Length: 164
Image (cartoon, rainbow, N blue to C red; front, side, top):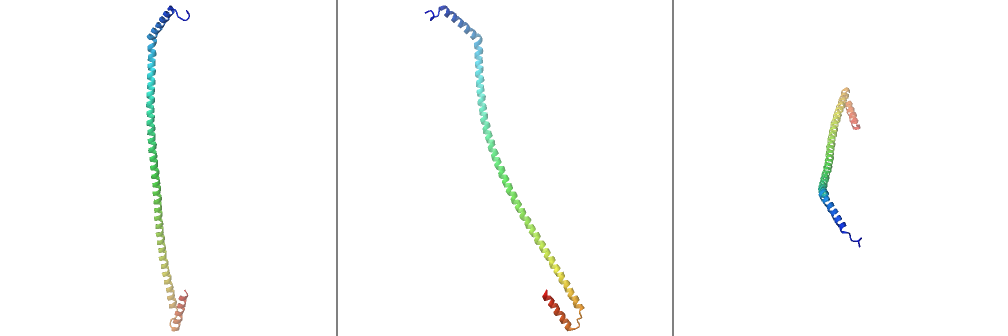
């Protein structure tokens, strides 16, 4: 049974060694180990807090980004609407300008036609006057002393007029 139960001396020296190691550890190692564990615990807590702050900041940034994207979409839609309205307005103005220009061209053409018509009438009057002068000249050149000659000349002029 000697192998199973330790001797009194072994228990004493084991207890004494344990107490010395416990004293040395409590005196020199226990405080640095506990302070190192406390530092580690504090650093972990700080890391968790900073991670939580970063998570909150990321959530805020995400919400802000979504807000900015939404505002950008609204602004884009407004710009497209304004561009569409501007293009419609420009097209309408171009149509109106073309219509006015066409009306002006028609008025100018009517005025030119009227001017040419008046010029043509004036030329016809001039030609009628020239023909009248030629007729009068022929009448004066003819010997109008006899009635029969006058009558023949008048019939000739009447026949000439009916042909024209």
